[in-house]
Length: 104
Image 1 (cartoon, rainbow, N blue to C red):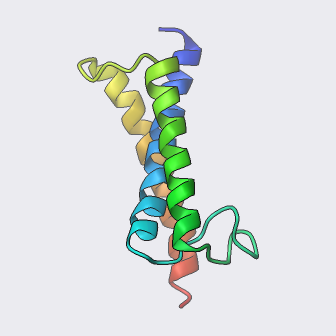
Image 2 (image 1 turned 135 degrees about the vertical axis):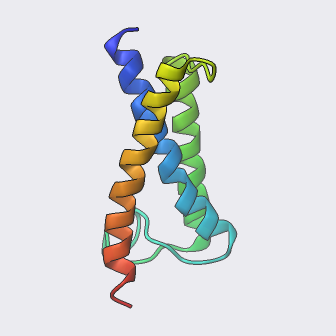
């Protein structure tokens, strides 16, 4: 497998993981951080903005996983690369959001 496919699978997993908190909070009607918040990295965006941002992340994940990376769920190596991307983004998000939310 080419390096660009491996990178696409890893980043696709990261975008997939990043879509979840935005979609879950937005669908639940809660404000949540997004790149469009003011001030960036500290403010909250509306639930609608989070649903749109989460859906955008989901679409990018699909493009990277299926269209670029040729993801095959029956290939354990590919599943591992996607899982590593999900894990990396999840840890990064937990640290970033945990720092923000624990100050409340």
